Each structure stands twice: as structure tokens, then as C-alpha cells.
Image (cartoon, rainbow, N blue to C red; front, side, top):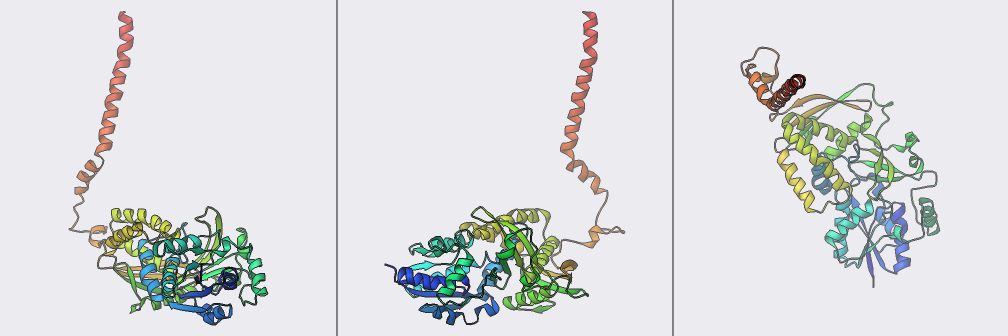
Length: 417
């Protein structure tokens, strides 16, 4: 018998109506678990809202620091980007939220876990793979896979019937997910891939058209692949991302409109705003290009999309990720330095690169006179580098000569005969 259910609670439309639904369906005590990972004003009054919806308790857990240091930084350092564009803001948050939900569930002696993910989305997989890793003994309740509600319009009607206040309306029916790293937008007019996102959709970024007419330079400092400073000022992790969100946002940086492949097999469209994350990815990639050799870069470029798939598909709590992290850590030991970028109306231009670990050395690449590189050495290098091609060509020449000689001998043999 299920007596207490721990629900992953966001205060949004789906989880708000799940509280009364679970109480009606299971006659159970509902304990809501809300994660504070940078939603801003969305968390205002969330505990009161949960209790008003019928929850017995609501735990609001401040996970911002852990989110940045244990999830964002490893994903950033890996270079993971999904679908050529998506910087995984929602994907990498879910393992953290679900893990903390399990910890609260254990503390309150919950008999089951519940989430508000739909049966069409990726989040159900991300949550439930984390449950499997930390609470394989607890049953999982996924109302979207059980109830008769089939659309967000139905959900809004259910909320009204049960006097549950929600922000979504039939006119503004976007599904949003916000945290320190990004904000995602889905649903409504966005379900038509031919439609242009309306101006009032965006919350973190200024339209590039309305962005300042003068460019702004921003310098990001890294130590061993981890961001530590903005414009020469050392900042703690959360403040660093917030600062870059503000800077990038005012210049229209980080807007992404993506038709992506969901894990369940369908295509979906999402519009993402990731201003600070876009600046960090650009700077980190540029610094790697300066300090890593080409073979290491190639190996890391091989791992990066696999890391992205792992995060997107909810396989965070696996040996695979631990192995990738070990590899990435080895590549990042010398990724220390500062990258300066110029921001202007939605664009980023790299304006400067500085690192004591740089493999770039002007003494070797200058077109002027130098005494550190013997150009005559190149001749021997080229002969050895192209040796296999020379051997192949010589072999082809020998075979061609033999064929020609055979062709000349054939008529003579016929004449003698």
C-alpha cells in the first residue's frame, strides 16, 4: 500500500495538477520536492502553492552551487553539444533534481516516487534512470502515462476545476523550463516549425535588432578548463554564470531555434536562450584550440558528441560518464588562460587569446627571419611523410612499364609465328 509519495515539483501546470490527482487516485500523503537551480521569480510562493494544492509538505532545496560545479562544469569541459546546437540546459539538470528527490523520499519514508513528465518526452527517461540508480526498490508513478488528460488544454481545464492556480493560459500555452544555464520554450505556435517565434517569447535575451549599437568586450578566465573569472574579476560559480547571462543577454547572444530528435524517436521543436552558456562554450573551445595539440583535440572531438548523447538520454549515473570524465580531466590540465570576445547584435567574435600553456609560438610561425626553425629540414620531413605515396607511385610506374613492354612484344611474337 502506498501511503506517502515524493513528487518532483516545479510549480508549473503539470506538477500543480498532479498533487490533487495523486491524492484522489492513491489517497496518499504527497510530499513535494522543488529544486532551486536558478528559476528566479518562478520559485516565489512555490511552497505555499504546493500546500494549497493539497500537498502535506514541500521541500525547496537550494541546489544552485552543486548544479554548476558538479553538472554544468563537467558538461562544459567535455564540449558536449546535442543536435549541433543544444547546450543541454534541461538535460543535465534532471539527474540532480531526481537524485535530491530520492534523498528527500528516503528522509520522509516515502513509498513511491512521482514526476510530471509526459509520455512523449525525454525527461521521463532522465528521471527514471536516476530513480533506478538510487532507489530501484521504489515504484514510480507517472500520471501522464495513466490519466485521461491528453493535452495542455485539458490540464488547464483540470486546474480550473480543482481551483489550482497556474500561469499557463489557452493564449500563452508555452511549456518552459528555466535554470541558471538556460530557458527553454516549447508548445503553442512553436509546434509549427514554419512559424517565427514571437518577440514576447524571449525572457533572457534582447532581440539582436534592439541590442546596443556599440560592441562590448568580455574576457573569461579559465583554470584547468573551469571558468573562474569575468573581465579579470574572480567570481564564484553561480555569480559567474549570472554575470555572463546578463552580459550576453543584453547583446542578444545565445538564441537557438532547434528541431531536435527526442529519445523516444520523434522530432520536436524547441527555442532556447543560453546567453552565458554560449559565451562559455565559445571561449572554452577557443582556449582548447590554443593549448591542445591536434591529436588530443581530435580525440576530444570524438568524445564530445557521445558525452552529449549520454547527458541528453539521461545516462548520467553510469560508468560510461565516469570514464569520459576521467578522459576529459586529463585533457583539461593545461586549459588555463583567458579568452576575450567582442559581442555585437547576437554575434560573437574572438578578440584575444592569452595562455602560458599556449602551443602557439610566434618564433616558429613568423614569416620574418628566425633562428629556431631550420626550413631545410622540411625537405626530409616531406620525403618521409609522403613515403607511402612515393612507393605506390613507383610501383604503378613499374607495372605500367611492364604492361607496355608486354604490349610491344605481342605483335612481334605473332609475326614470327
